[in-house]
Image (cartoon, rainbow, N blue to C red; front, side):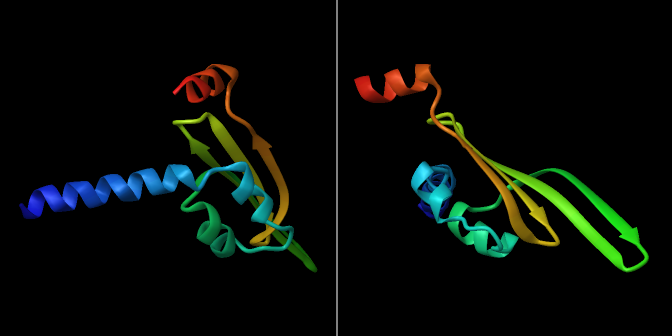
Amino acid sequence: MRVVLMLAMAGVVMLGGCQKVTQKNFHKVQDGMTYVQVKDILGEGQQTSGVGLNLPGLEANATVYEWRNKDTGEWILIGFVNDKVKYKQYTGPSDEKKQRMMSS
């Protein structure tokens, strides 16, 4: 019984992460937010790239994260500079997945 309950809870957590990747939540993300603030909205992101620059008088770190909803095909890409949102992009559901969602 305990194992079944744990598996059911894990399934809810996994579904919850996917459901956070939506256009509505994308619009909640604002320039200047930290990764932790974005993570509270979208869940854990997947880091896709990162680079650091260290020159006299100038230090900067740039990191890009992505979030994907495999069920709908929605995709969010956010770029951070010194842990602050500087760039964001939303890609909506693919046409094929839209048709499946509408016919369900």
